[in-house]
Image (cartoon, rainbow over all chains, first blue to last red):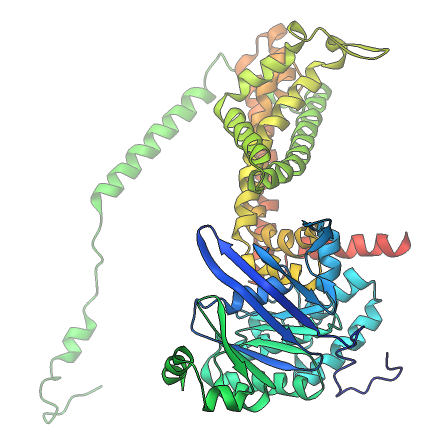
Length: 271
Length: 303
């Protein structure tokens, strides 16, 4: 931990325990009733890597993301974050689902940003950012508030500390949501279509913050339709369709020279 | 203002402007209003001039110590029944929303039963519970149901259990009104289910829950009078006891009515004040809740 945090730096991302992968998905399957949404996903994300998940709607990108912090239960396979099995305890040849306290503990280290922001409307901006660290990590109000102001600096919202969510634009709300997730000092950030609910002119400010975060070395998995962001910021893109990974590689390779017909068809539609 | 010949077409505007506008009288409404006043006035005169109503008795009994004791008990029944039913209502509402079929089934049956049977029947039922449970024996402990369930406990039990069913539906509505993304965001941050409920969902549900709870409280003030059937010593019981002796039935019922009106009016004013506070800020938390949070935070920091 840095003893003297400078206001404009993202504090200590990616404090990985092991040198191994940050996220490892092995044969992940997920069904909703009779519909199989994920049909055996294998995926590895390294520390400090920025990976964009691309694919048509209904391809299972968001579901995969939600499996990583166990907002969705798996139907098969397993997911490890920083070497730790998420959501289950292995006992003999079975995986037993963890209790709510254990699940909460695992989720603390995984930040998530939602398409519809989901800020707490009954708390002001600082309240939104400080509640989790105070409640869950037992940080003092003074410490949490000081850090909230630091984070607001990072997301360019220093003047909005005491505003309520409904007084903010969508882009500002999403940046507060990013600050709220960062306040828990996560080692991994999940972004679930963070700019899809925004007016076009507000997309840029959110992507700018995400890009800054990526440059600071945060491990990020981003479900997005923003090809420009993927090309510019992502170390790697993964293209999914109908519950499987179709192809992956560097952004330049997959977007400029797609090998599979499904990728080509998708890119023709979005580019 | 003068008009020149050049402004043709507006030349007649002076005569038009000066005419008085007479709104159309709705004669039907006026006649009805007159008849109504006549009827109400006549009835008031009839009551006021009746030789059978001893008006002085109303003033005499209005602040009678027995009546005041009754009012205290009526208020006690109201407050206790509301507090118990709010707490139990939250529990039943959460059971109703649970994915466990036994829990949600129990809650559904509870609500169905207690909303579906008359409160009066429930009051009499609890008062007579010793008929089929004469005593409670737990190991060496032996309790006579008769001593355990007095008129007071029977009345309170019936009021609370009945009100819980209505409260559960109100709370459930409030919980469902909170967007699912709210609890997802809290869960993703690492809140436990209990923290999610108490810190994120309930504070937002309160905005939806408080207005109907106010209505229920006002209604409860009057509903408590039903417990007079088991002589639970509320306001109506006291009034009945007095007029059983002196036969000033109308006078004492008027005394009771005056007090019920006073209590419901005060409660309505309080409710209006709370709702105005709630309505002031669309998305800020209700002040009531913030005040409560501040209080609990202060108590927590001392402990």
